[in-house]
Image (cartoon, rainbow, N blue to C red; front, side, top):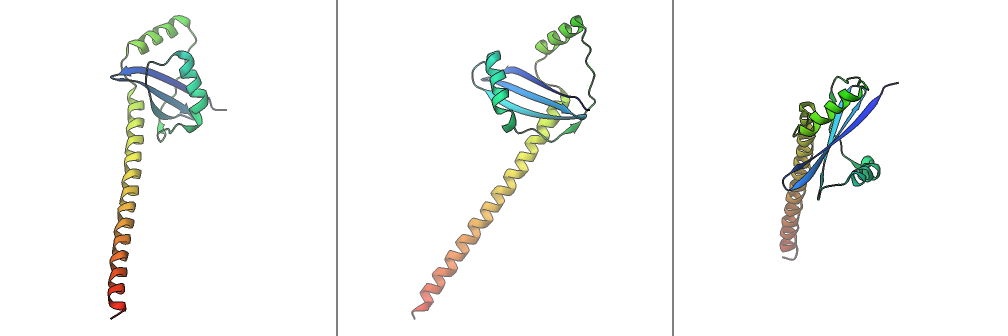
Length: 138
């Protein structure tokens, strides 16, 4: 049975609070970035995760090495202190977010291209229809 872990990092990036949800499952890391308006309280973050987790759009999975965390309380305290001092997210997470951003960009480009082609085709058909109507009665 594979273990999975989820970690949420929240920080302030002018003018909004940003949250990055990192999900590690089967040695693969996928990331989702969400924007909070005002500073979220702990219970608001927990409520957000419970209600909206299934609707979050995670990035494509990136291979990563999952570390088995020790339960030494002093070590955990040091790690928490480091994470609080660290401004930003891990490089693997940044890569996963960048991959997701590029994927959304290509989807948007293909969707826009398809819409432009449909609009072009519709205009062409309108012109052809007008030509037929002009010639029909004479």
